[in-house]
Every structure is written in structure tokens, then in C-alpha cells.
Image (cartoon, rainbow, N blue to C red):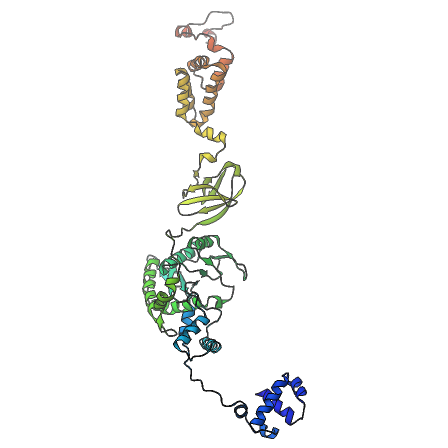
Length: 505
């Protein structure tokens, strides 16, 4: 009405032309002409007469009385609830509204009415949660407590809270800490509680879930990312210091603190299991409580909205894996929890990744798995796959005392006796492996017959080394007859160079 009144003032009080008025008020010549025509039709011809009228009276005289809104109003709660279903838009809801109310509001007014209702309810327009779309997770600031039954020591634990965006259906449990193992395990139990998988999981940027906090490209923790891949969902961390990104779980945490933790304030728990059993009982009551904004409970809205839209759970639950970087030692082993696991020997000095679960240890090099072992918690011991060893080490590993003795027996009984004596003479049998192998390989150079004879002579003089046998063969002593027992006990010949026993008396 301001421009209408100003057009009449400039024409009648200032006497300006149509073009001057249009240029001054940035309106068309047609609007200036039509405004003057309406004023003359209404019986107005002077500025004094117009100045005495109020805006509402002037509007009525020029444009006639406005129509009273008698159309049926749309139900904003119904609109908001239906918008959370997949594929439902405001345009579709408007068509359904007109089917029930043919003389209802047009689309623009329909949307405007819904937007005004949203502002009154303080709902964020950019967070209209579709059914099955988002699961919001966070930890409560107020921590429950458990008491050591033996010492009376009070220990604080964490309260994990997860809530679905469309229905606000809530899950809560107490955990020992916010470490990766507890954080991921809580997610697994939450999805089992909901009986399905949402499209997105929205956590805060805590270190258990996000390795690099960033507004635009946060780095998701490796085990947490594996968890999302296993369940076929996506991790979408909230922006740092932006609680509105996860307003649903902020409210859910507040509700859990009021309707669960506050009701436990006078109760004492001696274990995490006892505390969680009580939390689960109160959680049932929380989800069954009617919400004033919707006139329904969280459970009712969950059954109506989220449950049909959630993706099915995988057949096998997720098994947590812990990742660690390691360097392959000179002995082609890597260390995990003070236990040594072998990798292929060409990877010596290479950087590898270790992926360990409760049952297995995987070794990956440049994204490719190069070794897998059963997890062994025994510190200071080795788990070695023979195929990972160099050929020389594999051959050395293949030698055993039994195998060497059998090989010696194939040459002859004297050789077998010598092998046994060499092995028995060492503090550890492995120390005699090389001597035995050296003796047995002399058969390639001198033949088995000469080797057997040399071993017989070595046994007779109580020799127990490779050097003795090799010397016998080299000097041809194996071809000489051994002295008989009588010859060995015969007194020595008298000779001028032999002093005799009396010399020492």
C-alpha cells in the first residue's frame, strides 16, 4: 500500500507526470494509470481525501474487501511424518491433501503453512530425516559408575547412545571406555538391537572413529571403516563444533541422562553386566513413552517408519580387527604383542601392515595379503611357515637326527655308529648336523665302501668328527688293515731310542 499511496500523493499533491512518478518509484506506467483509475472509480480525487484514510480502508476502497480464509487447513504433523518416508515430497503430499479436501489451499500456501509450523516447533529445515536414512551416535557427558566389590573403589564408565533420525528410537549401553574396540562393538550391538542397517551413521569426530578431524574431509579410523563396509553403510562424521549436525543424538543423550541415568542415581552396581541389565530395562520404558510432538511413542514410530526402511543385517556379525604398522626383521619375522610371525623372506626390511583379530593375524604389503597365521598370545615364541624361509634354511630345517641316522645306516653299520656318536657328543643335536652331513657327503667323492671303512677306523680310535674321517680317506688309511687286539696289547720293541719304563723311576 505504500507505493499506491505514494503514487496518488505525487500525482495530486505534487502534480508530476506519469513518467516522473514511474521513474521515481520504479514502477511501470501501467501501474500508475491503473492506480489512478481505481481511485477515481472509488470516488477519490484529492490527496487530502486519501491522506485521511488508513491503509486498510484505502485498500478496501481500491481493491475491494479480502476473502475470509475458510479453507480446511492441512495437518502439519501429518506432513512432517510422511515426509520422513522414502520418496515422499511436499508436492505428493499436497496432491493427497487436495484429494481429501478439493477446495483446500494451493501448493504455495500449503508449503508456507508447513514452514511456519516448522519454525514454531524450532525444527531445522535442513534436517528432515528420511526413514532408515541416518543413525546418530554419541557418548553421554554424564558417566555411570560401578563399584569394586572387594575394594569399594568407584570406577566411571561410558554411556553409549544411538538413535535413528526418523523415529528417534534409541539404544543405550554402558562400556568400559571409548577405545576403538568398545566403540565399534557398541555399534555392532546397536544394529542388532534395531534389527537392520541405516544408510548413514553420523558420529561425533572423536578419536575412536575419526583419525583426522576436518570440516570437509575427515579421516575415518581404519577398523571403523571396515565395520561400515561389512554392514554396507557409510560413515558421515558431523562437522567439528557443529552440534546441530547431530541434534537428534544430542537430544537422545539428554533424554537418556534424564530417564535412565537419573533413575539410577541411588542404585549401586558391581559389574558392567549388572549396570547394562538395568539400563536395558529402563530403555524399554523410554522407547514406550509417548512423545508430545507426535502423540506416538518412539517404538510406534520405529515400527511405522524406520523398521521397514532399514537394510537387512549381514549373516555374520563384524569381527573387530586391529591394524598396526611393522617392519620385517632380518630373520623375516614381524612382532605383534611380543610374538614373532613369519613373512616371505624377500620382504626383509620392508614396511608391512598387520591386521589382527581374536583368532588370526594377517600381514599385508602394499594392500596385498602376503601371510596369514593363527593368533598366538604366547610372548617370545615364533610362528614360522616353512615356505617363507630361504631354500637353504628350508633344507636345514628338514634335517633331523633320525633322518641323519637313517642315511648313515644306508651306507653301513659303522657309519651309523659314527653318526650316532657325533650327535650324542654335542650338547645339542643340531650342533652335530654339519659334521654328520660332511661325513655322509664324503661318499660322493670316495664311495660308500671306502667311507664305511674310514668310519670303522674312526670308531676304533674313538674319533668323532668330520676332520678325522676326511683325514683317514685323504691319506688312504682306510685301505690299511686295522691292528688286532693282540697287536695293540703287544709290548713295544726294544730300541736305543726307546727309554723304557725304568727311565721314569
